[in-house]
Amino acid sequence: MEHSVSYLGLIPLFPLIGAVVLGVMHIDTCTRRKLPEKLYGVLACIGPVISFIYALVVFFQLKSMPADSRFLIHDAFTWFSVGDLHITMGFLADPLSSLMLLFVTFIGSLIHIYSVGYMAGDENFGKFFSYMNLFLGSMLILVLGSGPVVMFVGWEGVGLCSYLLISFYSKDTDNVLAGNKAFIVNRIGDLGFVLGMAFLFWAIGSGGFDYLSLRENAHQLAPGIGLTICLLLFVGACGKSAQIPLFVWLPDAMAGPTPVSALIHAATMVTAGVYMVARFSFIYAEVPLAGSIVAWTGILTALLAAIFAMFQRDIKKILAYSTVSQLGYMFAGVGVAAYSAGIFHVFTHAFFKALLFLGAGAVIYALHHEQDIWKMGGLKEKMPKTYWTMLIGALALAGCPPFAGFFSKDEILFSALATGHTGIWIIGVTVAGMTAYYSFRMIFLVFHGTPRNKESFNHAEDAPGVMTIPLIILAVGALFAGFLNLPALFGGNLNVSHWLAPSLADHHPHVGISVELLAVAASVIAFAIGITVSYRKFGQGADEPEYSGFTEFCYNKFYIDELYHAVLVRPYKAVGSVIWKFFEPNVTDIHVKIATWLYQKAGTAFKVFQVGYVRVYAIYMVIGLSIMSLLLSQSLN
Image 1 (tube, rainbow, N blue to C red):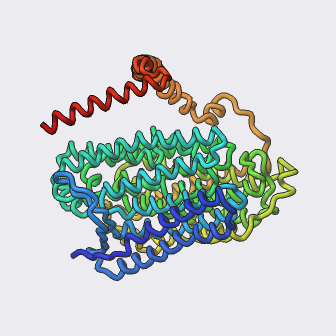
Image 2: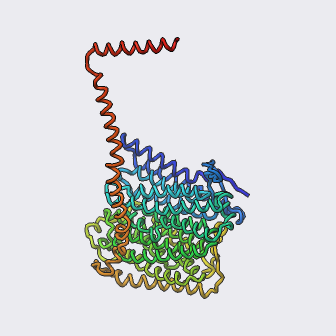
Image 3: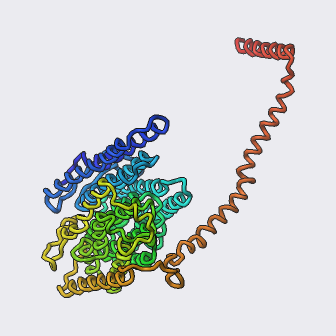
């Protein structure tokens, strides 16, 4: 039975309308009197907040329906039809998309509110919020799309907006290059997504190319075709969610304003890849090899990014590599067919990562855009609200019980252990200890010890209320969100997992309580070791390190960027230069030269008739009239 509701299309529409209105206002104010920032701020926040209200309506309407028929659809219009491919601009709300809608709109709204304070005084205030609204609207299309093609519209939309916002400070060449890097790397991933969609349509799309139809017909896929489709789609996910080997763009994405980093890392773009794999769980669950590849790629990415985060000195890059690492956990979860565990970590991560990025933004704001943690210190007393909220975020990120990150990450690690992926579990526990280490290395160096820059320290203070209130709200989420999916070991009944069950092809192995106790104990011990080592090295103050040998190798991220540049970028540019040097004179210029020569010769030929004497022009007129008269008389005869 289909449940059609027209208001589904309004959820992405409100931010998109806001993007257009704000964009037109910004263009208009470039030539006229500048409008008040408060007006821009209010208009920017209205769309996300209304979308959140509608997301709540969707959630409660789904909750009132029987579990086996929890879905709402809205087909706005027929987009195009080509042969057997019939694409409707349709929207689908089910338990999976409704959960995504809730935290995307809620956290997106908080980030917009925070941005009003953070971006105050910027000359492109209106343009910034136009892009932010467009970003959120694109993500909502991605989440609500009723099929892969509609999802791809939002997929490309968030890719465009990431480019616009990462390179927002376009007067700085490094920012522009960072935006280009993000855009190009994502295009590589998008090629995989497009090819995966093409194979999927060729294999089973004739029965309907929306998720509900594809799920019904997934049994028709041959194993080899299913594996090909899964791997191609995963290439797209690696691009959007920054997994090996396409992770290199995300740390450079820190070039944009800090609220952009929070939106990218917490509520929009980088979660899209995990969501896409979960959305196609009905295919991945039938191809265990594809799941194993996803899981191992994810956990190795988590390990690599954690190593890099341990040695970074830019507060935003620490958090950026942390995001890459946590995304690795999420892919490990969906790879071992614990799709609900992976999505639950997406949910909790949104709270504590948005909190940490916005908290870092408050620190940068207070220190006049200083981002080097080795030039901070002692800010606990000067910025108590920022300190306590960021401490909660760090505890959640590090997996300290009972904070949100502990429950969601532990569910992934338990699932890996219970399904026999012991190697993934061991690496995951190791990464948990490393996460605790680098999280509190950041906290200790920023907020504890003695100030390393007296001038910045003396002027530091907590940000205005418009920035600190979102921090407090997010801190509450980072503290309590994990209780929404408590396992039986802690007296819960996995509410989120049960809610997501109709949308996902979860695999729930039946194992003894001893396995779960082992997983929990290992996670807690790893956290304790990580924070203890971090405290001993940085808790009582520390001198700025001199990187050499292995530490320098890690600080420079194993020189992977340099390797890519040498192996991929330079040869590509060299080949392009050779081709251009051939085409410009021999192909492009030759057409221009031929056209110029022809016009020159034509001009020279007609020049003999332009003598400048009236009597000559009169003769031309008589000859012309005579010819016309002759032709006219012949036609009449």
